[in-house]
Length: 196
Image (cartoon, rainbow, N blue to C red; front, side):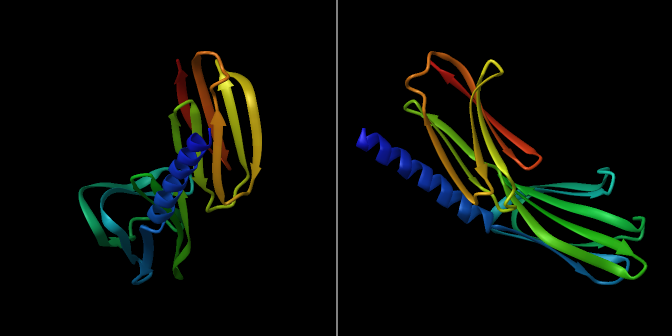
């Protein structure tokens, strides 16, 4: 039993370290050049593909690009003349990391908001142990739910914990399909488990 616990903790720690390392790998900057132009600079520590989108206040996508060639750095000058004055959100997705930045365009120029990083949680199931790790960069309220056929079996309030590492021993449960859901603010992440 101690060996299983040590292996489980080692796997959870490795997933956490990989996620922590990856979280620092995607940086997004918006550098205003004039009242109508800005340079978007995206950098990653390793070559990777990423998707770029800009949405207006209503959530309508006004620009998107899927970069198919893996790169470490991407720099592009955006001509913002065609955009109405208002608030916009730049979103960059690379693997399991999403980085967002808001900016406001007005006659006075372009004002850039803070960078917001979101890392997709890690879920795994092996040797009857269900694992979940998550880095809560936004310090949002977190809730964990465990269900079978949409029936709630277990719930846990995780608060605003930054580093979530949860493990559940499912060896005592009957065979069937289960689902674990992690709620982070307004985002929901789920993972299905088939227990034989």
